[in-house]
Length: 257
Image 1 (cartoon, helix red, strand yellow):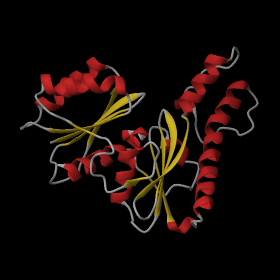
Image 2 (cartoon, one colour):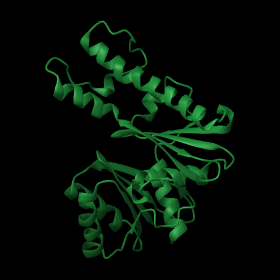
Image 3 (cartoon, rainbow, N blue to C red):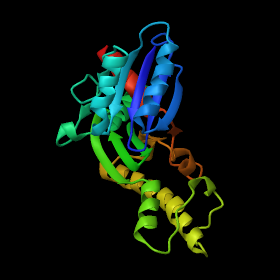
């Protein structure tokens, strides 16, 4: 069993590959960024394993790194693999400083570089706490990208910093949202839904223009919690892969095992 753990700013995703490495079927659970809940979930997973599992962790929350590592070492007697740019990845990272690149971006880059056509430029759009664009060349080079506030962060900022704007329930947003909102609530939904769709389409066009790359030579992947919501109204994506980061962690583990 391989346990891949993606510690993000909003939640922790745990991917369990029960028959690793003979097949790559994955069971995914997402829990709040709460240490006690995390510990209980892990205990249940590890108890279900017939042998001591292997573990890889990708974290963008430094304050949780040491507690989680200690949990594995002291409670479960497991030494997890921790993702950073010093590991074998098969990707060349063109970033400054190189150790500032997040584990999630490393994992995403490794996943697309290994899972999709090598002769294409890959663009990953990760709709999480931040909306992050990641560009990987056809030669396996991480070229950089762009980082925007995520949909929930943007909504929360407007709610906290204004007196008359309300908080948006994203479960209520659908494809029938008006672009021209005739109420405050509809105007907010329009800005978040259609605004981020336009942002995504526009940024991809500009990225390809800057790289002088035709659309036919690029592969665009959406991931993260809001990827499906956005992709339902735009043809810009070639694939939506909700577990892209976990798949990248699995591949990194295999490269460094």
